[in-house]
Length: 129
Image 1 (cartoon, rainbow, N blue to C red):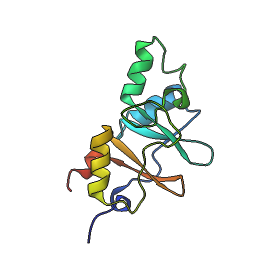
Image 2: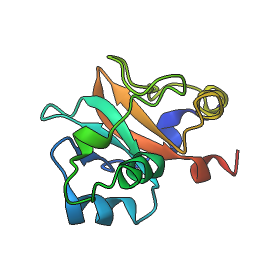
Image 3: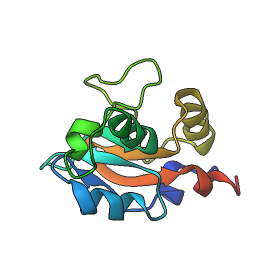
């Protein structure tokens, strides 16, 4: 039996586009150093990474001035924003999840079904595989 994204994903870890300040800090200070950003319909619209926050700090913004929506990127290495953020489906084989994470240099991968976030996979979750 092959392992798929649904076998390792953690449910519920995300940021809302309007999250800011201490909420961002609290959510990004835990297990995940990057989190998917969702809209009111729980659709993934981007991802906030530590690098996103560092870029904002370099521009002399504070975390309390920024929303998750203003910090997010689409997760593609070659650009910051597009209409199709990097995601995988629950049935994506782990080897393909790993390949995508390495190609796009992501530490966290959103898992979506019918455009709705159902979980996330952290790079650390892949270590046993």
